[in-house]
View 1 (cartoon, rainbow, N blue to C red):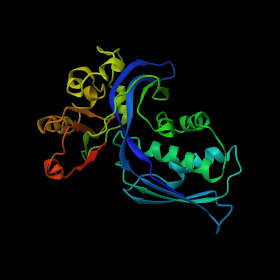
View 2: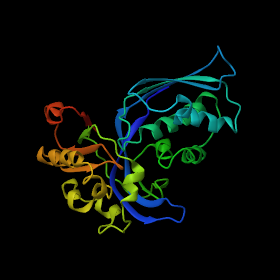
View 3: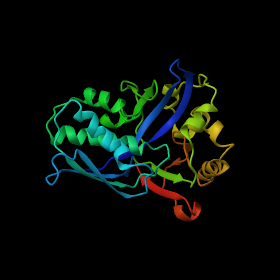
View 4: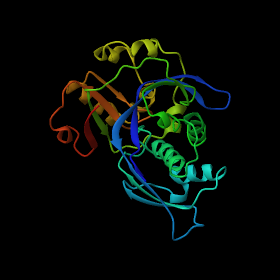
Length: 276
């Protein structure tokens, strides 16, 4: 079976309080976007006792394949269900360390594939519970629809209206910079935002600049001014709204119309223009 795990962006990201367990409560709008990895899962007929064998392609990934979230997703379900051995081919196209949730999406799609291939009949809420054990935002990619998220990014409020971005052009840029999520959190002072995110998101997009922010920018921009320069450039090019996604290092801009020469504007960086 072949599926295409997609990325997401954060529209607004407020770190509202530090928890007793050392994590932070946040609020954000998770919005899926159409840039994809490629995940192929087949039954391993040559080695029925090998569990999950992973072959990686595309963007280079650090770490051992056996520690990849896709393999961990298989092992997690295998604790409760007798799964046949599988071979997995994962082609990485979503930039790593970009705040786009690529690894989380791969894991969630792996759970969905195994559920369908082997007729486990797990409902979405059970799949979300398994996904949450793999990572805070993994569960988002089970339903994979725009949502207001709270908690550590694992509590979803589907009753909150989120406007569609259909027809907008999204320009996504990732500078060749690595931002440590742990370091980004360590420099944040949690606080309640000035404006209510669930109300601000309903305002016209050209007003979001003054209403919706990403708290991580205050800690990341001083250390990595190139990321701030990308955001400023997107506004210069006519973006209605621009923001860093997650803890970075990718930055996105929302436009009414396509802009020409994206690669020339952001030479030496990963950049892509998408119609949502």
